[in-house]
Amino acid sequence: MNSTTTVQASPSSATVGQEVVLTATVTCPGFPPQGGLGVTFFDGANLLDTVPVNASGQASLTTTFTTQGAHEITAAYNGNGNCGASNATTTVQVTSQPDPPTPPTPPTPCMCGGGSGLVNIHNSGNNGGWVFG
Image (cartoon, rainbow, N blue to C red; front, side, top):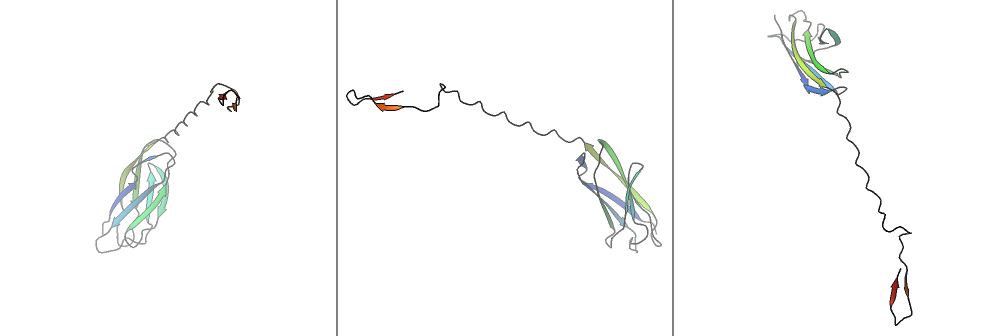
């Protein structure tokens, strides 16, 4: 029997170093796609890993990318005794990590007339008046 494979990336747009989950779904009419050699994931021509297919016909791989740009991901189902091989591709767009935000500028300290910042208050003795100084 012929199989059919689809592949999705979540998220499909990521930053360098961010985890991306690649999920391949394999269908094979009348037969489960389990067993065999599983699904092999590629980033362009670079082998990422081979993952077994579960009872639901899915194989997932979590990966990160170290370079910016469009990464063409291929999920290749390798087949088993009842299901033939198939593959599918998707693209993950990878951008650089954003620059961290600039910390706010601290406020300028108050230069309020110098001195210790203390105000002396005393009774001058002149008719009960108070002198500030």
